[in-house]
Image 1 (tube, rainbow, N blue to C red):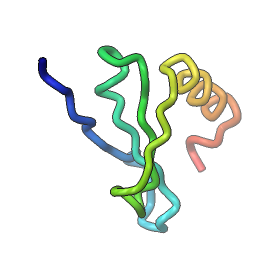
Image 2 (image 1 turned 90 degrees about the vertical axis):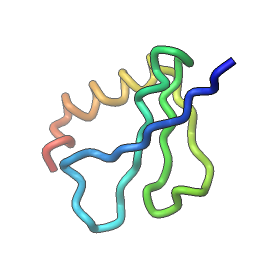
Image 3 (image 1 turned 30 degrees about the vertical axis):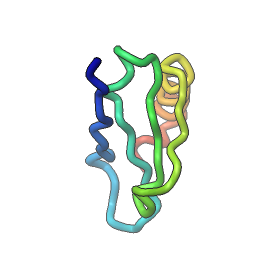
Length: 69
């Protein structure tokens, strides 16, 4: 059995101000979750969001115009 490793990335919209999160979207299809972590603490805990919750979150951010801020 192969265990898939998270491939972390943060948005290209992120500035280097330190208030960023990273996601590992590569696990969505195989595990049904999207891990999210604090980019300042990559060895710390990750929040595992079901793909449906992550999709709802992204849609809400986009609808509110927060993604461009």
